Image (cartoon, rainbow, N blue to C red; front, side, top):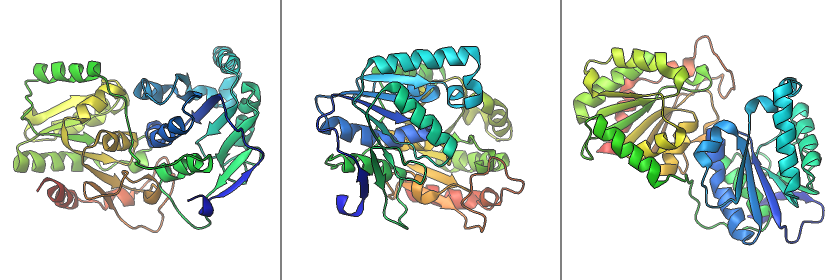
Amino acid sequence: MLSIIKIFMKKAVDNPHKILIIQLGGIGDVVMSTPTIEALRKHYKNAYIALLVISRASSLIEGLPYIDELFAIDTQLISLRKLFNGLYLFKTIRLIKILRSRHFDMVINLKRIWTWIGAFKTIIFIKLVGAKYSVGKYTSKSFFYSMKVKEPKGEIKHMVEENLDIARALGCEIKKVKLSLPISDKERKFILDFMRKKGLSKNDKLIGFNPGAFRPARRWPMFRWSALADRLIEEYRCKIVIAGDKSDVKVIEEIKNAVYKKESIITITEFTLKQYAALMERFILFITNDTGPMHMATAVGIPVVALFGSGEEEMFYPYPRNSKHIVIRKKVPCAPCYKFKCKNNICMQLITVREVMWQVKKILR
């Protein structure tokens, strides 16, 4: 593998004692990084390894057995404008002081840098943390890394594999690759209690719906979720669990209200991410837009039907690609794109309930 990965580097740290891994992407990015974190732990058996993530992802990844310490940063702190707010500045300084006190030998950034602002913030952060050696993905903006890992020209890899290439470049041996989430007995007990309160038994068939997405442009139309729920309830005698965060309450209620058999609908908007992951373990199937919970579902090992719109499928499909992880996507001339909102949303509008049911039958036959 190393023969096809270009590595630009200074003299490597022979035996780093303290390593900081940075992954400031969203929930899905953090989940897709777990195989790389595991590989680094197995390679650097005696090293102290810390992980820095955004605050929202920290509750999900807390307890990951491959790290010694977990740090979280508010997403607002990543903004230069917010940095000059007194409260945010205080939090940033406090975090930097703590990280600096750990005396890291090496910083590994798993997030690709695309902008000069991103490069500037990363340079300053690494300097302030005090690590002399840094590792990251090669771009025209990442000139400052001690080791820059470049993918073969023209080759598109899944983000899991792209992250693993950093571990490979550092000498890690990659065997079995699996996404992981540290779900504890506490979360599983919470779900058992929740199911008892809802009158659910272990024999009930639960199918999860994830109608939300950070980018509205990647959301399947609300009325189709309702139509799909009606079809699934009728054909499989199942219960539909529609989940999201507080920002999804209105959409979730609209979907439920449009379903014929409302008693077969369970809505969730107050769970922690770990509680949601523990509930996912009970699903026979998860149907989702292209968003973080899609990767959570594959990490807990349940079948997934992913409705892809404008995102880059080859980099972010449910990993690994197999008969239980199905992507539905329409080829449109404007995709891929990273629009937050889209007026016609044609890439999602073209996906029909009939197509989704067809893929569901392939999995549940």
